[in-house]
Length: 189
Image (cartoon, rainbow, N blue to C red; front, top):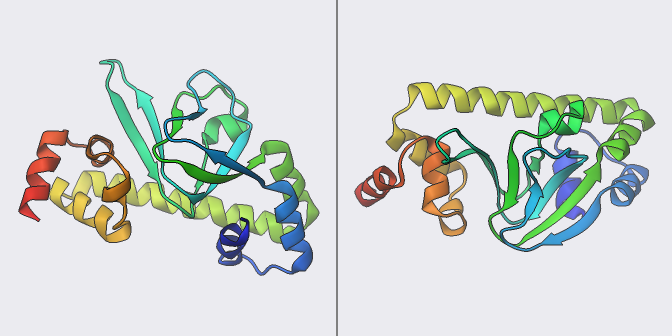
Protein backbone atom coordinates (compact mmCIF):
# COMPACT_ATOMS: atom_id res chain seq x y z
CA UNK A 1 0.00 0.00 0.00
CA UNK A 2 2.93 2.37 0.63
CA UNK A 3 4.92 1.62 -2.54
CA UNK A 4 3.44 4.51 -4.60
CA UNK A 5 4.10 6.95 -1.76
CA UNK A 6 7.67 5.69 -1.37
CA UNK A 7 8.27 6.05 -5.12
CA UNK A 8 6.85 9.58 -5.03
CA UNK A 9 9.04 10.59 -2.09
CA UNK A 10 12.06 9.01 -3.79
CA UNK A 11 11.54 11.47 -6.66
CA UNK A 12 12.47 14.21 -4.15
CA UNK A 13 15.06 12.57 -1.86
CA UNK A 14 17.02 9.29 -1.67
CA UNK A 15 15.52 6.73 0.72
CA UNK A 16 17.13 3.90 2.64
CA UNK A 17 15.38 1.01 4.39
CA UNK A 18 15.04 2.90 7.70
CA UNK A 19 13.39 5.80 5.84
CA UNK A 20 10.93 3.39 4.24
CA UNK A 21 10.14 1.83 7.63
CA UNK A 22 9.55 5.31 9.06
CA UNK A 23 7.19 6.26 6.22
CA UNK A 24 5.26 3.03 6.64
CA UNK A 25 4.88 3.63 10.37
CA UNK A 26 3.73 7.27 10.08
CA UNK A 27 1.40 7.17 7.05
CA UNK A 28 -1.79 5.28 7.91
CA UNK A 29 -3.88 3.50 5.28
CA UNK A 30 -7.42 4.71 4.85
CA UNK A 31 -10.03 3.44 2.37
CA UNK A 32 -12.71 6.06 1.82
CA UNK A 33 -15.94 5.79 -0.16
CA UNK A 34 -17.08 8.21 -2.84
CA UNK A 35 -18.69 11.41 -1.53
CA UNK A 36 -17.02 11.46 1.89
CA UNK A 37 -15.88 14.73 3.47
CA UNK A 38 -12.27 14.60 4.61
CA UNK A 39 -12.12 18.29 5.60
CA UNK A 40 -15.09 20.58 6.14
CA UNK A 41 -15.34 24.35 6.26
CA UNK A 42 -15.02 25.58 9.83
CA UNK A 43 -13.12 22.53 11.07
CA UNK A 44 -9.44 22.14 11.86
CA UNK A 45 -7.51 19.75 9.65
CA UNK A 46 -4.76 17.86 11.38
CA UNK A 47 -4.26 15.37 8.54
CA UNK A 48 -2.68 15.47 5.11
CA UNK A 49 -3.43 12.81 2.52
CA UNK A 50 -1.48 11.01 -0.18
CA UNK A 51 -3.75 9.62 -2.88
CA UNK A 52 -2.82 6.08 -3.88
CA UNK A 53 -6.00 5.69 -5.91
CA UNK A 54 -9.00 7.92 -6.49
CA UNK A 55 -9.90 11.56 -6.98
CA UNK A 56 -10.59 14.41 -4.56
CA UNK A 57 -12.06 17.89 -4.96
CA UNK A 58 -10.97 20.87 -2.91
CA UNK A 59 -13.75 23.43 -3.03
CA UNK A 60 -15.39 26.46 -1.48
CA UNK A 61 -19.00 27.55 -1.45
CA UNK A 62 -19.01 31.16 -2.63
CA UNK A 63 -21.50 33.90 -1.74
CA UNK A 64 -23.90 32.96 -4.55
CA UNK A 65 -24.16 29.43 -3.11
CA UNK A 66 -22.22 27.98 -6.03
CA UNK A 67 -19.44 25.47 -5.41
CA UNK A 68 -16.09 26.70 -6.71
CA UNK A 69 -13.60 23.92 -7.41
CA UNK A 70 -10.19 25.18 -6.31
CA UNK A 71 -8.29 22.00 -7.07
CA UNK A 72 -8.89 18.51 -8.42
CA UNK A 73 -6.51 16.02 -6.86
CA UNK A 74 -5.49 12.95 -8.84
CA UNK A 75 -3.61 9.80 -7.82
CA UNK A 76 -0.04 10.22 -6.58
CA UNK A 77 -0.63 13.70 -5.17
CA UNK A 78 -0.79 15.11 -1.65
CA UNK A 79 -3.89 16.98 -0.47
CA UNK A 80 -4.95 18.97 2.58
CA UNK A 81 -6.11 22.42 3.63
CA UNK A 82 -2.69 24.08 3.89
CA UNK A 83 -3.79 26.96 6.15
CA UNK A 84 -5.55 24.60 8.50
CA UNK A 85 -2.91 21.86 8.49
CA UNK A 86 0.16 24.07 8.87
CA UNK A 87 -1.22 27.13 10.69
CA UNK A 88 -3.88 25.48 12.84
CA UNK A 89 -6.63 27.68 11.42
CA UNK A 90 -10.15 26.52 10.72
CA UNK A 91 -10.46 25.45 7.12
CA UNK A 92 -12.30 27.81 4.80
CA UNK A 93 -12.62 25.07 2.18
CA UNK A 94 -13.87 21.51 1.87
CA UNK A 95 -12.01 18.39 0.73
CA UNK A 96 -14.26 15.56 -0.52
CA UNK A 97 -13.74 12.27 -2.29
CA UNK A 98 -15.11 12.19 -5.83
CA UNK A 99 -14.49 8.46 -6.23
CA UNK A 100 -13.72 5.63 -3.85
CA UNK A 101 -10.19 6.34 -2.63
CA UNK A 102 -7.21 4.53 -1.18
CA UNK A 103 -5.40 7.14 0.86
CA UNK A 104 -2.43 7.33 3.16
CA UNK A 105 -2.76 9.97 5.83
CA UNK A 106 -0.32 11.58 8.20
CA UNK A 107 -1.07 13.85 11.13
CA UNK A 108 0.59 17.21 11.54
CA UNK A 109 2.43 16.02 14.65
CA UNK A 110 3.72 12.91 12.83
CA UNK A 111 4.89 15.07 9.92
CA UNK A 112 6.74 17.35 12.35
CA UNK A 113 8.30 14.26 13.89
CA UNK A 114 9.34 13.05 10.42
CA UNK A 115 10.98 16.42 9.69
CA UNK A 116 12.84 16.27 13.01
CA UNK A 117 14.44 12.89 12.30
CA UNK A 118 16.84 14.06 9.60
CA UNK A 119 17.78 17.08 7.45
CA UNK A 120 16.86 14.91 4.46
CA UNK A 121 13.19 15.00 5.54
CA UNK A 122 13.32 18.77 5.96
CA UNK A 123 14.64 18.91 2.40
CA UNK A 124 11.74 16.73 1.26
CA UNK A 125 9.25 19.09 2.91
CA UNK A 126 10.85 22.12 1.30
CA UNK A 127 10.96 20.49 -2.15
CA UNK A 128 7.34 19.35 -1.84
CA UNK A 129 6.21 22.88 -0.90
CA UNK A 130 8.23 24.29 -3.80
CA UNK A 131 6.42 21.94 -6.18
CA UNK A 132 3.04 23.03 -4.70
CA UNK A 133 3.95 26.69 -5.19
CA UNK A 134 5.11 26.15 -8.76
CA UNK A 135 1.90 24.26 -9.56
CA UNK A 136 -0.23 27.05 -8.03
CA UNK A 137 1.67 29.73 -9.95
CA UNK A 138 1.22 27.79 -13.19
CA UNK A 139 -2.50 27.47 -12.53
CA UNK A 140 -2.87 31.22 -11.91
CA UNK A 141 -0.95 32.04 -15.07
CA UNK A 142 -3.02 29.53 -17.07
CA UNK A 143 -6.30 30.98 -15.73
CA UNK A 144 -5.19 34.48 -16.77
CA UNK A 145 -3.50 33.73 -20.08
CA UNK A 146 -5.06 30.64 -21.68
CA UNK A 147 -8.45 30.27 -23.31
CA UNK A 148 -10.95 27.84 -21.80
CA UNK A 149 -10.24 25.45 -24.71
CA UNK A 150 -6.50 25.63 -23.97
CA UNK A 151 -7.01 25.10 -20.21
CA UNK A 152 -9.20 22.05 -20.91
CA UNK A 153 -6.70 20.62 -23.42
CA UNK A 154 -3.83 21.12 -20.97
CA UNK A 155 -5.77 19.39 -18.18
CA UNK A 156 -6.51 16.40 -20.45
CA UNK A 157 -2.90 16.26 -21.61
CA UNK A 158 -1.59 16.18 -18.03
CA UNK A 159 -4.37 13.95 -16.64
CA UNK A 160 -6.05 12.07 -19.51
CA UNK A 161 -7.98 9.78 -17.14
CA UNK A 162 -9.65 12.69 -15.35
CA UNK A 163 -12.59 12.85 -17.75
CA UNK A 164 -13.58 9.25 -16.91
CA UNK A 165 -13.39 9.83 -13.16
CA UNK A 166 -14.49 13.40 -12.44
CA UNK A 167 -17.93 14.86 -13.27
CA UNK A 168 -17.94 17.48 -16.02
CA UNK A 169 -19.40 20.10 -13.66
CA UNK A 170 -16.31 19.85 -11.42
CA UNK A 171 -13.93 20.03 -14.37
CA UNK A 172 -15.79 23.07 -15.73
CA UNK A 173 -15.60 24.87 -12.37
CA UNK A 174 -11.92 24.00 -12.03
CA UNK A 175 -11.03 25.53 -15.41
CA UNK A 176 -13.29 28.51 -14.73
CA UNK A 177 -16.22 28.03 -17.10
CA UNK A 178 -19.85 26.91 -17.02
CA UNK A 179 -20.64 23.22 -17.71
CA UNK A 180 -22.53 24.19 -20.89
CA UNK A 181 -19.41 25.90 -22.24
CA UNK A 182 -17.34 22.82 -21.47
CA UNK A 183 -19.87 20.66 -23.32
CA UNK A 184 -19.39 22.85 -26.42
CA UNK A 185 -15.60 22.61 -26.09
CA UNK A 186 -15.78 18.83 -25.74
CA UNK A 187 -17.92 18.53 -28.90
CA UNK A 188 -15.21 20.38 -30.86
CA UNK A 189 -12.52 17.88 -29.77
